[in-house]
Length: 133
Image (cartoon, rainbow, N blue to C red):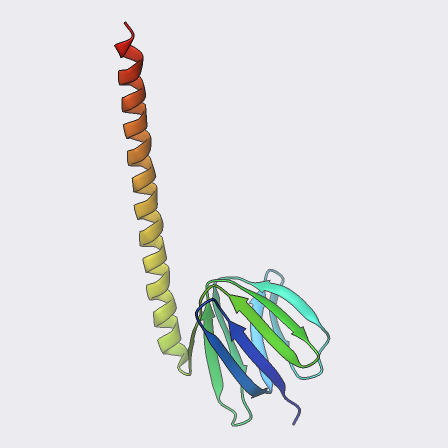
């Protein structure tokens, strides 16, 4: 059975699997799979989960906020800002949902801060404009 090498890198982590027999992911064009000796591929994976199978027939799951995927010469590289890896699909789905809720909360907080800054700047601008009179 032919295999390929998988490397997943972020600024803080490196994960490698020497013998991968099958990789399944999706990009803007839809779902796709990779096997050893496949044609070269370069694409962007959106927020979500991919999976790969090892010779022991187990599937492993990888959650990414977004990743650049490059496959060439039986070497698959995923480059991302962060990733979570696990063997339980259900557990990974829960982690992804929690991560998305946290991200949405952070975005809401940032929007509120920007709105407050905007209001404070407008208030200061209006005060400054009336000081000259």
